[in-house]
Amino acid sequence: MCLAVPLKVIEIDGNDAVAELDGIKMKIRVDFIKDIKIGDYVYVHAGFAINKLDEKLAKENLELFREVANAAKNKSK
Image (cartoon, rainbow, N blue to C red; front, side, top):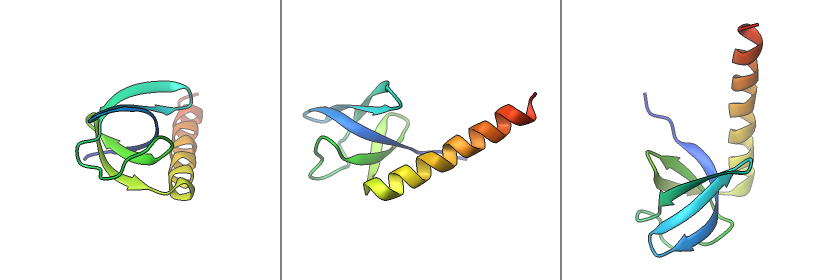
């Protein structure tokens, strides 16, 4: 199973970029994304941005990730 995580692009230098989630920064490649700009949200898999998505959808996805993480955390107690 593959999992792509939505991240916000905060720096761009050619095909190299930095994206972040909750203050955690990650170096990514943006080779596959046309017209990428700072502030865009992208799905990232294995260090590559594979798709751009709008902010509303990104935030909905991130909330679902948080709900799953919280449920798993509470179940392990």
